[in-house]
Image (cartoon, rainbow, N blue to C red):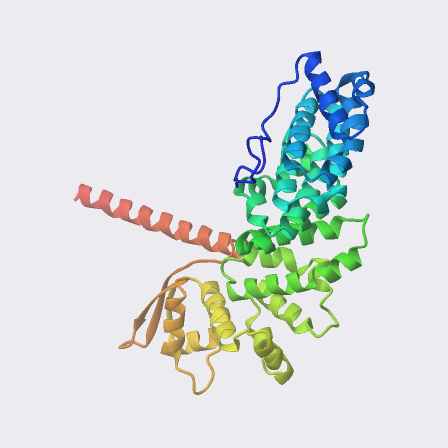
Length: 405
């Protein structure tokens, strides 16, 4: 398929259309055009070249600087269109070789071209490559860099690219190192295009890949990714119910563990408390003024954290009725705090269905929505099904007795 699917007027759409170079005389026309644009009488010499590959390598590439120096856009478009048409007549590695050759020639003189015009030509080159061509990786890396520098990242970054990123690793035959480079390029594109959700999805993949990458300077890569890592952890902490799986995946990564022993170590500890749902550990953590100051600096709400951990605690309780005293202990409600306010917070979280019986001083937990389904939740579900089975069995027995009366 072609890429990107999104389109924007580059000012040369008509001239970028392919010319069907089927007949030998059309290759001769390409040779004639290059000979004339080159400013030297090389027409006959170029006509003697055999095949489109030789004409591109010994005709188009060395003539390109002179075409650009003429500052005639129409001449450049004509030569490029015929060059692209010639490329379609090549196959396999021969095509890959000459596509990359033309790419290098264009990039070497990019200062002589408008950025969108260059990007349009590079995109066409990318699409000339077979879908499984390994050359697509190096072409994309050049495209990504130019799209960012030209401030047109959204033009290149469409949903198809983001949805297929893992398939590119297979189809382009990428090892871990090149795959991490691809993810980094996509992260830079997402940041430039202000795609926050997509950025978050890709970041975890990138950080996981760095843990596997043995061929690059991982320390330098981790250092560059530190700010991104911190922002990701902060976003997970602010939405812990939707990010449980990501939190577990992230906490063990080198990118997160590198925070140990730095000024951001409290963030690593906080993430660990969330992963383990360790309410008591967090409360002890919150007794430190240094930790509270750090959270304030990172705009992390201590009160919101407590509300989160109270929801975790409530979700761990088996369904049923509880006295105020039991709930106060489970939710770590301290002196001077209102238990009913804490219950209201549970209800507002939409993770716990609670009914308060003020007359009896009881709280009935009717339903909880787990962050994650672990062994404890499977055991509880098994017990509930067992109770339901016994209840149904009892009803059937009563109905059977009633029929016999």
